[in-house]
Length: 373
Ligand code: MN
Image (cartoon, rainbow, N blue to C red):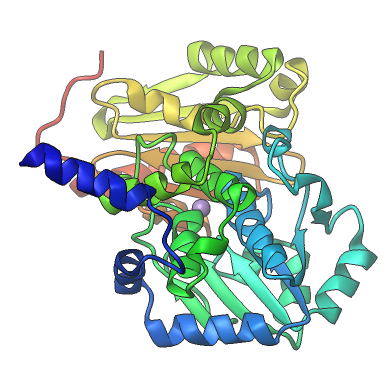
């Protein structure tokens, strides 16, 4: 009986279905209000020139969600461009459409013109113009209709339609659901699916965090059905690193990591000289902050890096320890278990403040603590 049921299921999946399969729409509509989806769909239809944009220092999800939607719009015969605040990492250059991305810090006038000429701007994977640096005010002040598709907490009110779902693994997963809810599921081609899948894979670190909702695997399945090469995405967007990056990360972990035992915290500090010594390029320390969490007993991890203009704080945690609240004390924020901030001052002062603040969060530690060894 089971096997027959399974074969029927398989047949249902493989059979060509005209339009978006109703059960997919049904599932997606739980997340996205159908009136909102319909309004967004109408705005896309009415638009002549659409700009897709995302946060500064774009990551796999920022680029995945913008490019994923970009390819869909192309398929619908729309004129669309992706405009990002600054250079995306090389690890994403395998994505279809990557070369066509317009970078504000490189071609400011051109980007300003694109934004000025747009009648619809889709803001992906960010919740506030502040997250776009100098591009922020340009987008916020534009007269175009604006739609936010994002999964960060506390979205600010600068868009005409705000689709904000912090419970989503990634903006890319949310974008897939929005696309399906608008009735465009069948229009998702391999290029679009590849970009969306990249956002999900990078934000969930290949399905190791934020992936408890069973439906995310349905989304993954639908993307794989479109022909996505997930192995390649994992290799290119998640694993690949330069030799100097590997050496810098190894050095940081063996020489620059301190364990704050009472708070079950790991703190890594890297100064500008050390970055120079390892020929640091942006992206070289990507993922480093996660590594200390592999140690049994470590509940939160902080990486403080001395950049040119500020100290960049990255924080990650397990067991729902609120690193977003820790980062708020530095004027930053983010997700409960993945957050960041920028500190203006010396690296040593930043570290000292962090160690001073941490004990305030003692109550958030799990009641049974393991020794770190
Ligand atoms: Mn994201």
